Image (tube, rainbow, N blue to C red; front, side, top):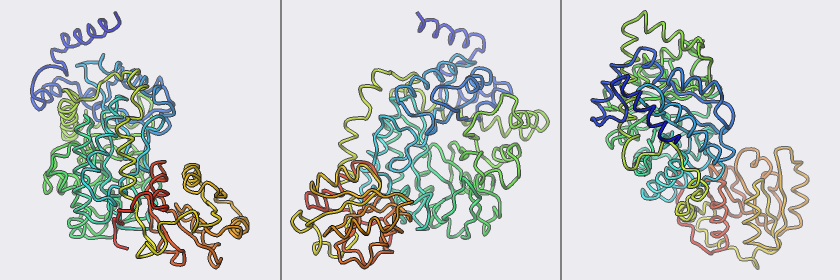
Length: 547
């Protein structure tokens, strides 16, 4: 009965407005008709994408959908403790949107890159990530990663993913990109990124390449500062922009603009996300991109610090060429951003046309990808969510990917140390901070002792534990771990480094006996790494950057 009432409401909406999102017309034609029929408020709402606080939809986000009919919502990590609950939330959000004028569904987006960045947790797959794909080197691994991540998102009603990350592994000190990159080679990043895009599309999910024009050449984080990257346009064109040039040629539907300044280019000190030169002249005119451009979160310091307030930042983002402005929080309905943009539309015809053109492009994206046989369902099937997450075929694939990507970094050749048998290892100490490291370490070495450390660990404690071991297998993930590891230098012990995330830290410890690199802290990566250490599988991966 409820379903019949729901369909009736959509029918009445179609009758009143004369148009409906589900009318059978080509996307470009219907998008133009819908945009022309919209009021300025309705067109402006389509360029808004908002986050919300809590696991269930807040009353405020529901007001934005029911009263404003906004274009999209963004799911963050704080919304996703329970995937079944998230699926119900997505269903509630979409029902409200579909009951609005023209029956237009929401873009429901998230960051599910794989590896380190996985905003929807709960029952979804943990995966080896982009740098593992770069280490394996197979485009099919990128395709299937995109596909299986997309299949899980589709079950949850998430129809847009802010992935792949095609930033390059250029600055090795970066703590914001690191293992999120496929590697340092721009052509390989383009090949693997294109394959990931095709996998996402095959699963019905809209992929979004980021962070245009490239976040990999800085160690600064645009969440807290506006990074300045001192490279020329020529360098950008032949390095950072290569993956975008390749992906656009393959039909990429969406790009995320980054809050990054390139003072040696015509953009000068403006963030690329607010630069019409970067977005209109380079991305649209020179590269030929015709899809949707969405800002990274405008609540980030790197976005609003340039103009000093969020209202002017949002307006400039649209003038520069973004089609969607994203906010991680939910403003009040008559927040200054909304009123400032609406008043600007009323007073400035040029800006009004900018917004309406952006709305039309958003509508065409929705009409192209949210209708069809492989499209993500608007209302998730909770029974399927419970039965199919994590996606079983994906679980098997991600374990195989982890195995294919394991890399022996030291020594060269590795067969002077690996495989490390239980007899050769003697008394083993496992030292690390991740539970799965100890779980799989004890499978490989059942008699091993364990030492769990933290950032506040006293170095004397690990030294005392290490003196009782013949072999120390140390899990290394960041600079804090490196500090603790260095306290073991000078001990007459066999020290094997088990690297997760970025393996660059291994370069700073030439004195260790051996080192194996995996590229995430997913259980599959620990299982694969220990299997390679003891010789159950070969380590076939290659570092995806120059050593």
